[in-house]
Amino acid sequence: MCSDPYRKGGNNKLIKIFHREGKYGFSDPLTFSSVVELINHYRHESLAQYNPKLDVKLLYPVSKHQQDQVVKEDSIEAVGKKLHEYHLQYQEKNREYDRLYEEYTRTSQEIQMKRTAIEAFNETIKIFEEQCQTQDRFSKEYIEKFRREGNDKEIQRIMENYDKLKSRISEIVDSKRHLEVDLKTQAADYREIDKKMNSIKPDLIQLRKTRDQYLMWLTQKGVRQRKLNEWLGLKNETTEE
Image (cartoon, rainbow, N blue to C red; front, side, top):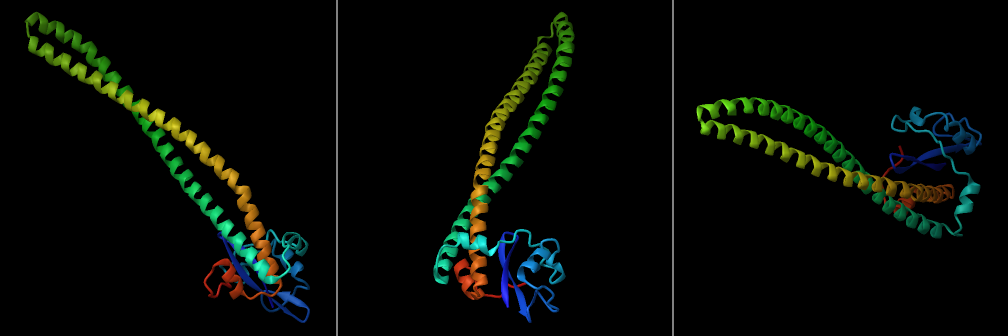
């Protein structure tokens, strides 16, 4: 019996491959003549038939030749230490990517909120300007009327109301301009975050690939899962599914 590492949800898991009388498989009856034949079959078929939680396909198998090209150490312990190192590097890079992704998502939401607010400001400004035009037209008529009547108090009240309306429009326009400046700055930050994420992706993929090749090499050498867990910093509990 051996184990085949697979990856789901960003985590590495091990699934047992049974070998008996020259046949291989994940459960009885064993129908595959080799591990390669088994893996090639499950590149197209899901493992869910064995366990609903294993709704994955073995899309990216790594050949022994590829592993030997990557794994240069000459002892299991040395390979295990390198596995540990690559796993730590991968975790650190993955945390950095996750942090950027959270910032990317938050910034995207804030940008959308600012754009919505700017649209609301535009609508509000339009309403106030229409109101201001209407008040300006009627104010002239009433001011002329009250001037003939000598009612300076009403004239003063109309002018104060008109000035308040103009002042309010000015405040809204200023708020909108400040928001537009903030949006421009945040949009630049958003692009920079996206650039950083894209620069990290190749390193993250390569570290994961190398880590998984070391894990596969050790698994094929018959290293027990308890020992693999130690190198991966996992608790020693059942992880087969």
